[in-house]
Length: 262
Image (cartoon, rainbow, N blue to C red; front, side, top):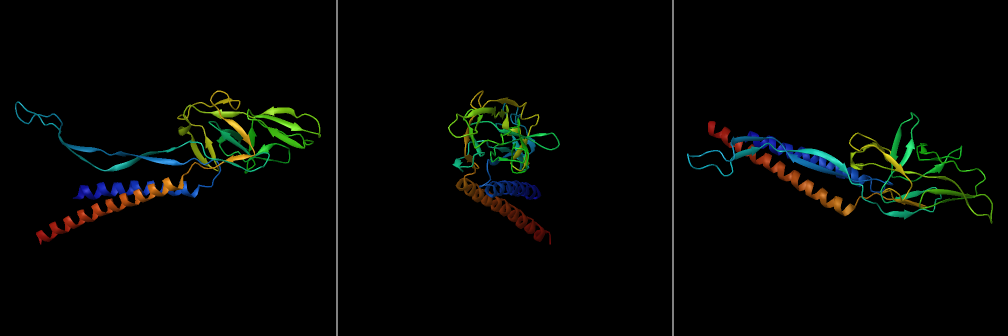
């Protein structure tokens, strides 16, 4: 009965973490480029009273053995980098990645961060920066006399300086990929950082080496499906209730034992 209390308590703790993760997914349903997280569970240690295959007589053995588990725990969380819906904004420096890859921004301390959020703007120096003022890397500088900026699917940035003249290519936007993007560390602010689990980063032009293409004037919505999250929330709530019921049953059994002693 004491074992049942601790086992059920581990289930309640695990379901609480599941609810916390679902709540974060739902809260970021409108966050540009957000990728939902999933929780994975694993069973905890077992106490073995009889080994499977142990001898029961001289000529027979136990077909299953006897093992009692001690509950569950969260094995980890993983980001699901499925493509989100692309929505038009009309802003000339908004970019969405259709396919795999990340933008890279440079922090003031010299570190790099990676993001799927393509909402960029011009700063006072004519460089493309994100909402926090972090510079897109490699740096993209738009000439001051540009009257129109055209960003191609392959990342080519062209500017038009006077009406009637053809656009002139000035630079190119690079995308970045990882062998294991689920190993990236979420840093908040729509940013990820490289880890040993993600593998070494490599760059490529959009549309090459497995990277996606760019869509100017679009942004990528989060890949959170509200219906799926609500269903998962209901399941987590019911699992939490069932584990709490197991604790109540164990408590009632302990009460009965105490009454027998009296």
